Image (cartoon, rainbow, N blue to C red; front, side, top):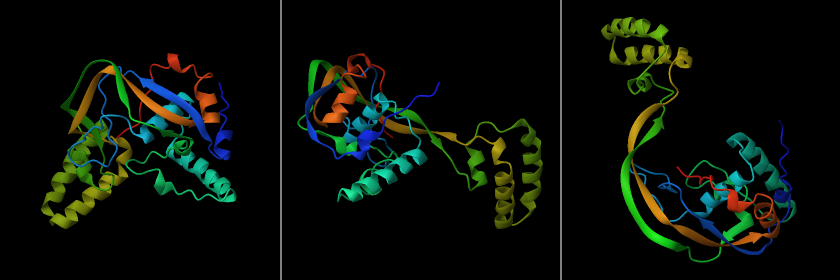
Length: 234
C-alpha cells in the first residue's frame, strides 16, 4: 500500500520556538559513534544532534536511501537560495554518509540529564563489520563462501596462474574476480573492537524545535508509544 509522505516542512524557514524535553529510555546497550573511526569504535556518552535527527526522521517514516536524500536536499538548496540562505551538503555529512534533512529544524538547548538513574557503565566487545574490496580478488580471502559453481574453477585457474609473474597473476585473478562478482558475497565480516554504553536510566534531552516539526512529532506520531526507534550511528 502506497503512503504519501508530506515533506512541505522542508520548504519553509525553520522557526525554533517550541521548547520540549525528549526522554529516551535505552532498551539495549548503545554504541553511538559520531566520527570516522579507526581501529576502535568509541561511543559517545549521549546521542549527537545528527543521531537525534535520524531518530526524528525515523519516527516520521522518512526511510529514504542516499540517492533520494540527495535529490531532496538539492531541492532544499534551491528553495533556501531564494530565501537568501546557503546550504552545503558538507555541513551535514560530517562523521557519516547519512545526509539528514531536519538538522536546521531543532537544536539541543541545554545539558542532557539522567532520571530514574540506577546504573551506567561502558564495555568493549567485538562487532562484525561488513568489509568490501570490489576492486581486488583479495576480497575473497575474507569470504567464508562463494557460489558452488566457482569453487573448482577458482582452484584450477589460481593454481595454473602460480607459474606467472606476481603482477600478471594478480591481474588475471582480479579480472576473473570482477567477471564473477555476482556470485561472490558483497561483504565479508571483519571483527572490530567497539565500545558500548549501558544505561539503566532515562536520558532527558532539552530541545527547541521548529513549530511545524513539533506539531508533526508530538501529537500525530504519539511519541510516548514509539518505543522501538533507533539512533543513527556508524
